[in-house]
Image (cartoon, rainbow, N blue to C red; front, side, top):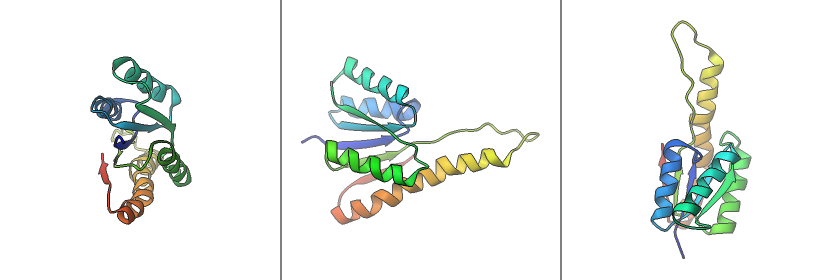
Length: 138
């Protein structure tokens, strides 16, 4: 049975590149992002370059704790126990000293900090109970 990795924020950038690299190395790769178009693009790239079915996509807004639990359960139901998790989802809102807005910072904290916590709080107890699993936070 192949190892399973789950990568959040995998629709673009670093997350996408990590997903493709894990697929090249023979892992079953579960990718999550908010945008289905981005996810489908990663699945298609993997299909063209190296494998069919090695990358599975799951729409996820990491700021939604319940959705995080549901996606986690679905991945394990479909692919098996997750061995590695890379909590990579994040956003950037450019800020300038002459135009700072509290809502921008709230959005950054909600996605980059609390979104990561949603993943950690879901996965740590499960990995501890199994005595296995690795988590990386980007």
